[in-house]
Image (cartoon, rainbow, N blue to C red; front, side, top):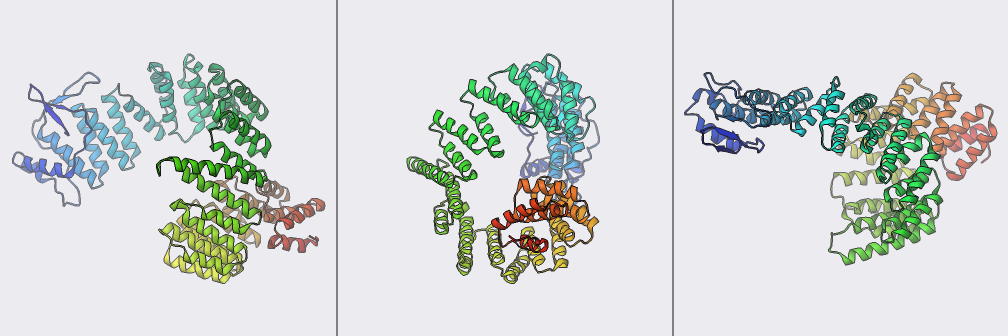
Length: 618
């Protein structure tokens, strides 16, 4: 059984090393056994597709040995034991994990050796058999009751199998008996993480924490995390505050107060975070979290103020320069963002020169800066500068993508043939890059209104790269442009078959039906499926709003479309919202939306059609 040592009684003490027997070792062992047990050895047939027969030989072997918990057994290394071990390993090599595991579970019970049960567990997990894995884990834990890994695994697998009865009591005993309660609570969180029902997990954790234990900061933080996962934001915020009260210097607790409290009481959560920062100005993670939340609410100047204060305190923290540049860009302060990025690049260049090549992440950091500088130049209409910035990317994993972006920029300048030549000249290194090239070329042709050429490119790719979701999806969208709804539907259904969780495929098909006022119940089912997969996607919300409008439910339509427009003020969404508002008699609001959409995208066909249909001058 792996490495063994002969003791003075002539028995074999099983070693502490895991049981890992290779095929070559098994073959040698089998050869040595054939003289002593020919009938049994003959049953292990490597070329037998049915696998080895795991029947033990007849006749007396060794008596069952009873041990105190935690001891390793002393047993005679009989032919039966060695045979069953080797046969199990061969069975597992052939993919017969269940057969192998069953034999080892039985053998572990007979010998009292927990490591054999652990090996059985490995086989059941390899075969994806959770109930079988639970049985093996229980055997392991019974044979090694003081092994925390064994008991943790048993509890985790019980949770994964939905067996929660008695789980809270078992966890409570485990936590109460542990010398380090914080570690025990962390292990409990790992076990509860296996449960799909988060509310049940919260109830179990509540029951598992004794009154004495639940006063610990770690207990409050665990309750906060599980309550947050269960959707109980008020409970999560209260537990986070209790954790902070128990340990006033805990930055992780303060982070939870801000993150969980924001959904329950944003003003109080921010005030609590600022109070902690006042007491602990070096709380970097909390300050970054606060800056991120401010930025997400559109309070860019306040977010920048936080980052600038951090930079003054930690001038060597150069990552803050890049973060400030990102925020400045989002706030529309393009020149300020550009200056910060140039400073950041100077720092990264100095780092690269001072270090051994490849010893820092300066190259990757510089790549991010060049990408953002290119975007700034593009937004300012400096397309040549945008192309040049991308030429500064040295990262070989990003080089092809940079070439494709350069081609897209040339296309924006109207230099379509130059752009296509750049795509053709690039040298893709793998299938992923080849796909990037196909999609880039199709997009350039599509945006240049050369739809038939774009379709031809994608049709060729669909033959060369069959079952490629991205190609089929883009091809479907181009067929929609040509009014080939049957072809669009065929392709989108192929996408859904290949990727049943492709939310945008469901959405595109549902929207197409709704826009044509066709098969509205089916359109609703498709869009609802898309929304279930991606509940906050603005384009899917737009589709649901447009469907509701087609169904005559204008109030519902406005709710969905307003959410979509708030998340992403795109011209198409604005046009849909404007049309619904117009039918509700809110012509002034509708007109304002349409004109704003026209200013943003004067070539948008949805906007132009809506302006014409409603008789509104842009």
